[in-house]
Image 1: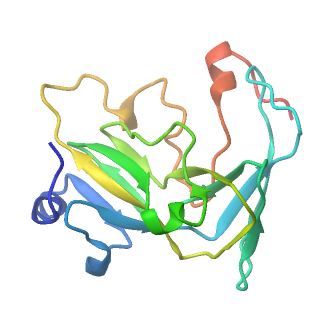
Image 2 (image 1 turned 180 degrees about the horizontal axis):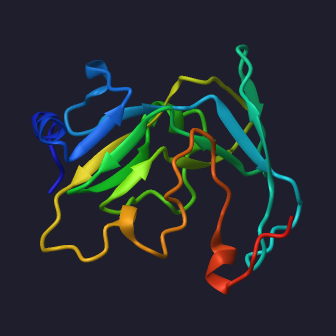
Length: 183
């Protein structure tokens, strides 16, 4: 079941959901709008290797925006830091953003119970489009869970994305193969 606006507010009051910064104007009927943070990142290498660390170049979006191009993966980040301690958070694109041909996640729309961080966005576009820091980019939807939890994400030993950050985070799939970061 998806939480309604009043249930999201109740869960915030109970401390089960944290959204910083929180703006009541961003609360929808059954979702919360999130915004593009001020940083984007692109991979340095043309060919990515799933078994190795793939370094990124991170940069700040200028005040006059930044043009995204097709056939390139951009990593973005939400302005909002979130904590979800008793629900499953889903990040979906806003229809207005989708109508500009912007996809905000390739496969990672679902968070885990216990996820506490900003959201890294896997952004792709179908035609060139200018984006701006602070623009609405997506919406969080919260699902109730049924049953108890053994491994909350924020205390799970194998969790790769627990380090709080305001910048996009590159893939850490290489850690599944036991590879070390090459410096």
